[in-house]
Length: 177
Image: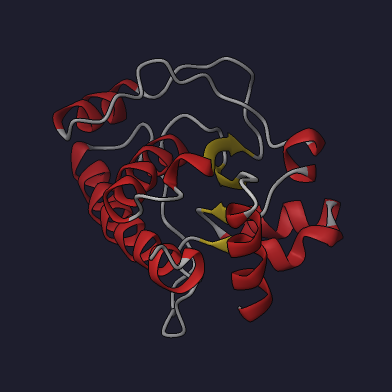
């Protein structure tokens, strides 16, 4: 983690953007919501560098230009997050080349990308395993097309993990002082 810490602090100190990709399968529910929540949480914690942190979402099997799932849009809106202009994007070589950290919803997604891009192994983590030594589960299940209770479970996990990761980035990586 020390090399990662040095990399992000060096980039931000030199006014270079730090690129984070949040990825799921189709880039219409989980990654879209998590991107919005992580941006929100980081903006609350980091005053000096947060505008130079670029967080985007993508999907390992995403189409191009699909809107966010309507249920997750309503949930996000109720929390003061606007994802209405989201347009799905596949995780492509152009995104992978400039990325500093990729957070996946499921381990198989991480494995798929690292198989195609072995140079990214050190930058790829599931949301649940990133900076979390006590992880026993590595997947955040997809609520798309399921009952509202499944969305509620997802949102609870996503909110908790976004706060945890934002705090980790703010206090252990970005060192905003």
